[in-house]
Image 1 (cartoon, rainbow, N blue to C red):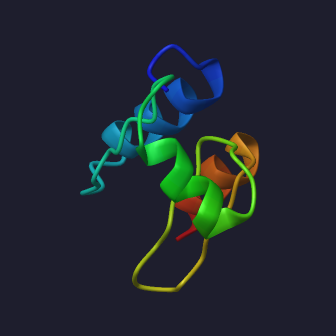
Image 2: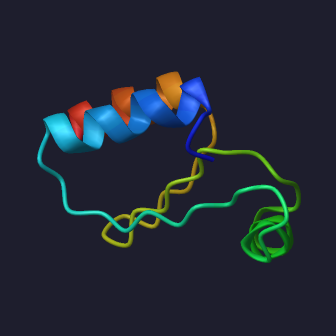
Length: 70
């Protein structure tokens, strides 16, 4: 969700750290919302998945902390 301030801070951190990533937008009406709901059990963004560690998380402050530490 592009306008979400929580998503924005995570996106900015990814760019700042020059981390390669794939952004999947889940705008209202997008079928990707249902995919996320089925995967995570509810809809909440941001929801990064780190394929290197298997980590999946929701809270933007925790995500930024994780990105900087990892």
